[in-house]
Length: 381
Image (cartoon, rainbow, N blue to C red; front, side, top):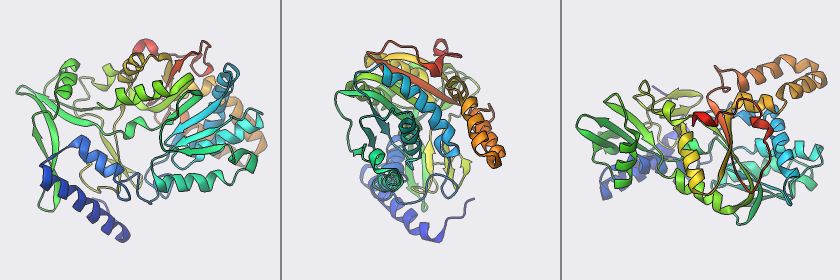
C-alpha cells in the first residue's frame, strides 16, 4: 500500500523488534501501550526519531505552518490576557517545528508585548533541536527569552498553549457488542502486527465505556484515560492565566455519535491518511480526535474554569483574521492569491475551520476572551 524509503526500512525493523520483544515477554499489548511505544520510544518512536514530520517533507501540516496569520491572531488573544495579569509568560507544550513560537514572538515583539519568558516543554530531543535552530534565527533580544523545559513549571502565570497535542495521546481502543465490552490488543505473528480482542485491561476502562451507553451495537471507538491526569497537571502548574487547547475533535455527543461506529483513529504518512496503525510503525503519525466534553469535565475536576469553546474559524475571525489578511495583501501584493488560499485552509468548513476547535481553560482570570466573542459553543459540551 505504501512505499517505504530504503533508509526507513531499518528503522521499521528496529521498532518492530522492540515491540515484538515486549509482546513475547508480557503477552499481547493493549493498543494504548502499542501506540505509546510507536510514538514515543526514545530514538525510534515517531515523535522521538529524527525524521521530517511537519510540512511538505513530512507527513502532515499544522495551522501555524500554513500561515503566520494564525499566530498573529493568537498573539492578539495573548495580548489581552497579558494586560490582565501581574506578570506574563507563555508556555508552549509540544512546539513541533517551532513555527508557532517563532511567529508568535515576532508578533508580540512588534506589539511591544514580549512575555518575560517563552517556555517550551518538548520531550523529543530531535524536535527540540529543530526548534532551537528556528528560534535562534530571531534577534538575540527575543531568542534569549525562550527556555526549554523537561517538566511542567510551578506557579506559572500567563498563557499555556497546546496546538495539536491531545490528539497524539495514547488511547485505549474498544468494541462493544451484544456479548459485552472488549478491548483491542496488538499481537505479532507472520512477521506483522495483528489485532485481537479480550477483556478490558483495567476496571477504569470498563466503567468509562459503560458510562458512554453506546448505541447501536456493535460499536468500536477509542477513549483517552490519560487526559484527566494531564489536565490536572496543567491546573496544578497554573497559578493564574489561561490554557488554550487547539485540536480537532467534537463534543461527546458527536464523538460517540450513532453514525460514528468505527471511531476516529487516523494515521498520516507522507500526507496520505489511512486508518491502519499496525503498519509503518514508528514511521507514521497515529492520532485520535478529541472528546472536548471529556476535556471540560477534566478541567472542572482540576479546579479550572471553561472560559470558551468554539471552532477554529470563529476563533480566528473574532481575532481580526481578515484585517491581518488585508494588511498582508497590501504589504505583499504579489502574494495575494497565496494569502487568500492560506485563509481558506484555516477557516473553510471543508478544511480546518469546523473540525478544529479551540477551548480556553482558566484560573483566577475574569475577563472576556476576544477569541470567543461570537459563536461560543460551550452549551454544546
